[in-house]
Image 1 (cartoon, rainbow, N blue to C red):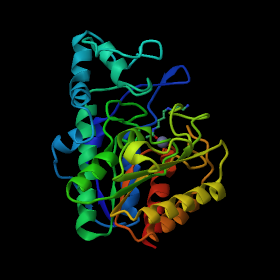
Image 2 (image 1 turned 45 degrees about the vertical axis):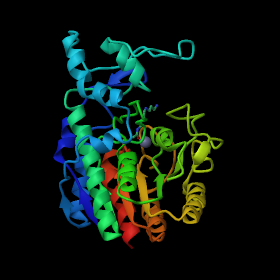
Image 3 (image 1 turned 90 degrees about the horizontal axis):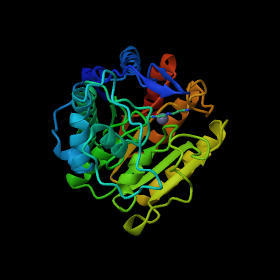
Image 4 (image 1 turned 120 degrees about the vertical axis):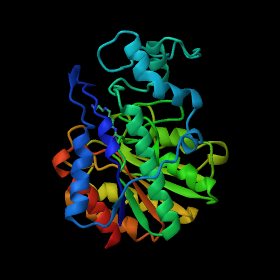
Length: 342
Ligand code: Q9C
Ligand code: ZN
């Protein structure tokens, strides 16, 4: 299987995440991608290529233009205000002030465009995010050509990024940008299956009213887990998109038997939709030793479900999302890909 990878992910190297009331080194760190790349090499998964530069057009086909220019200039505006650290949102237009104008001030803009505070915008974040969407787009074009499968080793991840919001370590929604670009090249239907531990709120937001992307997500119940406010089973799409969002929230301690049953249900629904392309938002934070999650999958379970995904027989793009048990992140990710090929 082809892997697409860019060294530019290293430019996303934030120093601080707010976690448990403390500033800690971010869980979403450069070493994650290095460990995954190393495993691609030692397992001889296949060739590794660098991405092409697709520019901003495919980004603007999914994200709001004001949001995109905010991301581009956020860090320099933060520095220009005289702040020494990284840009962190601290004040939001919450339920009692919910029709905001977009403020001029960078602290106000951060609150307007952030969906959570853990994700600091550091110097280099924008460049890394741009390279990450290029990784997803390049892998997708390869799959459209070959009708096979490819691995987009994206970093930073993307599935929490909504039309005009960042957070949950995500800035640009790589998987959504790839899906939209495939549609813009003439495909009529894409299935986007999110197996990251966290609900893909950003992807759901982008496609909620549409019938050309079927979004399905298996995740920790938002009653118990981030992103806390989206991902309930009752959310099934609206308008043309009615019935084309499927959420499978699961409780703390969920093991592979229940998780696999949800996956099999999702797979049956994808087959019924008859998509031209399958995009997997691949997070391996469902692993039993993940430091911020609560499912109980073992490393062998990743191989097993990779096989189920491969058996679908669809052109498939794997887009890297989360996974924070750094020592095992390479093993678990490549297990899925090897299962797919088995
Ligand atoms: N107590 C991705 O996996 N904070 N993002 C969780 C847990 C945010 C995860 C706090 C987690 C974001 C791409
Ligand atoms: Zn996650």
